[in-house]
Amino acid sequence: MPRHRETVPVTPSSALLHLCTPADWAAARAAGRLAPPSLAEVGYVHLSTLEQVTLPADRLFHGRDDVLLLAIDPDALERAAVPVRWEPGLPTDPPDLRFPHAYGAVPTGAVTAVLAYRPRPDGGFDAPPPPPAAGTPTAGSAGWTRP
Image (cartoon, rainbow, N blue to C red; front, side):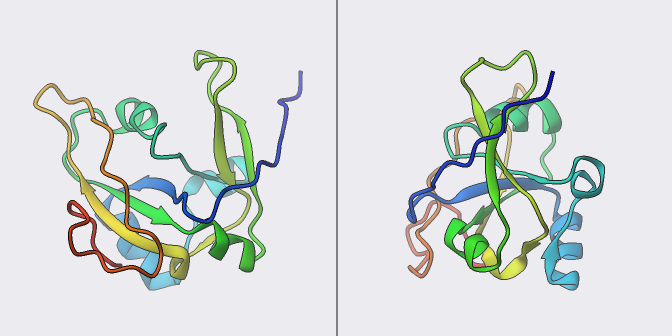
């Protein structure tokens, strides 16, 4: 049965998040674009919202202390003609949960902030602090830095 695909508008203030390692981020910066293996494998870059990110972080990076969160400006994706679709995650996820997927490489210029995302002592992840809005200073942004 095909998965339902839906395009949902994102408000300009709501950054999308991508989980990666420092090595992945360094490779993306060198290439000028974020194109993880998922882009070739399934056709999109996995993204999350601030409210969702703990779910994939716990699944994919449980206990790892080398995780970065990249805050991505959805307006920059739109300007770069990279469509974002909101689609179901895994079959075990709540049925109404939709994750944002970028259907194309993400230009590194769309990344507005980076956070070293560390797990709790038990290996799980807590919700991160909100990233600063695009174009605002990072001072007081709870660990977020500019790329």
